[in-house]
Amino acid sequence: MRFFAAILLAVAVLTGCNRQATLSSLAGSYYRGDGTGYNVYLDLAAGGTYKAEWHGCFGTYGMASGTWLVDGERIVLSPSSETGMMKGHLRELHIVKHDGQFVFVPDLHDDYYRKYGPDRYSAFHRQKK
Image 1 (tube, rainbow, N blue to C red):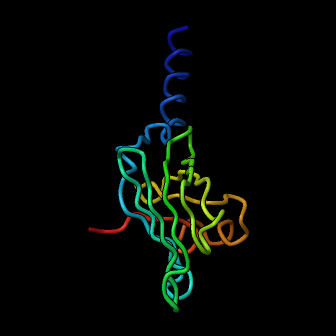
Image 2 (spheres, helix red, strand yellow):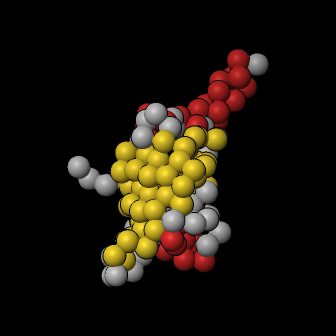
C-alpha cells in the first residue's frame, strides 16, 4: 500500500510541473515573431496586468493592455484596451516547458507549431535582460 502511494505521489509531482507557474514566476518581458512584419512584445507584470505591442516593417500595428491570470496550464488575458491588429489577437496562451524555461504557445494544434515546436515564431520566449 505504501509503495502504491509513493508511486501516485511521484506521478503527481512529475506531471504537475506547469502547475508551479505563478504570476510572480511568469512575470517578465516576452517576444514572439519573425523579425520582420510580425513582432509581438508582451510584458506581464507580477501584479496581474499586461501590455502587448505588435510591431512590423511599417511601425506599430496595434497595442493591447489589461489583466492576466494563470488558470491551470494556461495564461488567460483579459484586455481592457486593444487597438489595430491587436484587437482580438491574444486571449489565451498555453504554458509549455521548453529548454528548462516556460514559453507560451497560443495554439497547440497550429500546423507550424506541431511541425517546428516552440520556436520564436510559434511561442513567446522570455527576453534576455
